[in-house]
Length: 336
Ligand code: KG4
Ligand code: ZN
Image 1 (cartoon, rainbow, N blue to C red):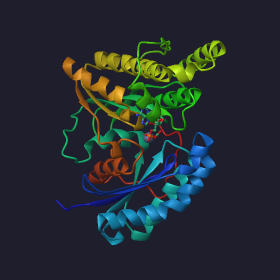
Image 2 (cartoon, rainbow, N blue to C red):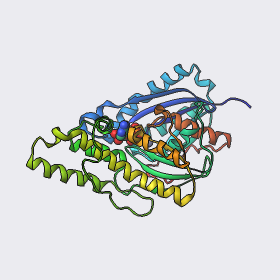
Image 3 (cartoon, rainbow, N blue to C red):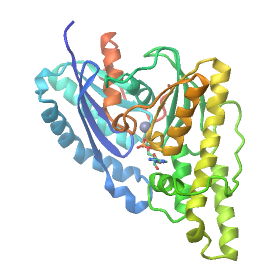
């Protein structure tokens, strides 16, 4: 079997990413983070597209250099078609098309969420899930439980009806005065606090779906009430508040994961997305191994938004000659 080299582009949100894979092995995984959004406390779409436009060619050049290959060695170009921000997706889509056409090689479209799930199949030496398994994708943009039947067929069993879990971390962190993104800082503080000190409500959501906006509001009202009586309430209790917030978010998350395992009878859970870096969430997922679950957590570089996950997804399409047409368009709300 001949080796194939795939160059993959991911530009769905605020990271400009380019990866090169030789079959299922990653030769280069380049990510250019956009610092510009920090001062706004969130991603500004217009600024994201502009930054992608200036970052994309340098990211591709760096990836080629790291991989030690030439453009003429490439077998196919892959890109994220959606979901994501339209202006951001347009940059990656147009760039990928031009490069594929210039090199006269196939173009492969990838669904961003499928990428997060198939990241588990990047060759790292770690064990890989077998089909069927449940994918749990948790980040600043998504919260999904997905039934994965094979490399190409996935069914969303549950998703958030409002905020993503990463937003719940970031928005409650902001209420507590933490900088953006607040998730990692909240996690650090939580590790030193008492998770049972304060009680926050678990929002209701049907079946395997999630809701986080009510949680954020409950924290806000709680903080407003307490600081009225004691202006130093946050400073005096920060670690316990963070621990209690994190504990509640973990409860909300895993209640539905447990339900999904029960409903499907599938006991393999593969977690991905930036929020899977959370120490409490990792610990909780690993604890289910005692109940007979098999769990998977990919290396961090393949779990936050990255292009290697787009490359591995494209590899499985390449094997089936599942190529995109050159009139394909970016698709911000594409279904899975
Ligand atoms: O996957 P990601 O890098 O980008 C997307 O949103 O797609 O995820 C970023 C999110 C942010 O909301 C960030 O606060 C959260 O992941 N995050 C964490 C931790 N590390 C990153 N949330 C809680 N605990 C962490 N340790
Ligand atoms: Zn993502």
